[in-house]
Image 1 (tube, rainbow, N blue to C red):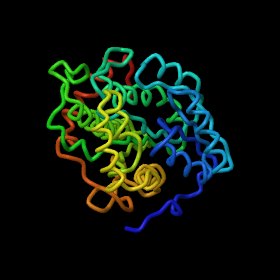
Image 2 (image 1 turned 180 degrees about the vertical axis):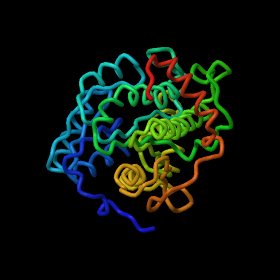
Image 3 (image 1 turned 90 degrees about the horizontal axis):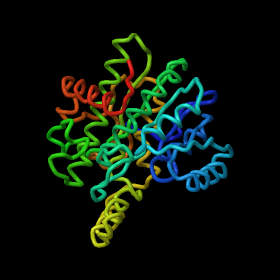
Image 4 (image 1 turned 135 degrees about the vertical axis):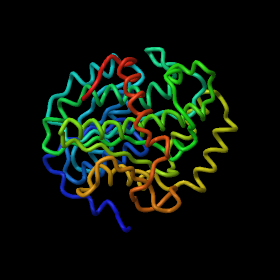
Length: 302
């Protein structure tokens, strides 16, 4: 399949929120949405970086996005951010994430990767659902990773890493949680008779700061250098890494519950619909994860 950002339709009149849009995949997702006419909200935890990103986006797209303070590792921040918005909201791109840091916890005591990558986005989606349902054709895109295939299971104990912490295993589990959530959101939306479309995406291997930020937190400079070198050789540009997210966000004939990734071996190239792992498609586990997440965050949807 041949696809490029030139295939994105006119988005005039549509309103989108992109998390983690100060750099990397989120930045290029926001940029293309702006270029095609959408009103975009850049949500990020660092106000200075968010303003700098908004300035760059305004220069490149000739229109300035709105900036929203949002720390996904703090459920109070998620609640405050959602309360600042009104509807309708046509598109939510759950993009922000952390990868392979040393053991850390969120403001609410959850393991940082699960707390940020999954629970923060779960709570944000639930709190923004009333605004999404005001839109004519609402859509939620949740960004996962091909590394979700490394996770062999998931339990409520993974929210606090009670069985021990392996940074790469925790990352894989958080990305598995993203897909379980995405597919369960689709099931619940359809069961409720809603026209909300839930889809997932993964960037393949893209050149962003994500691969090195985690190891650098632990002061592991050698690991950071090795990852940076491998990323430079194998990875595709961040702009291309954003294509699956953009395809999932804008393709008019996309089926609900689709998962989009790069066509060439799952690492790079034009986007296409791909298959999540078998465990990611387990509706029983997805339902359990939803219940655990609702209890952990104090918010629910559908």
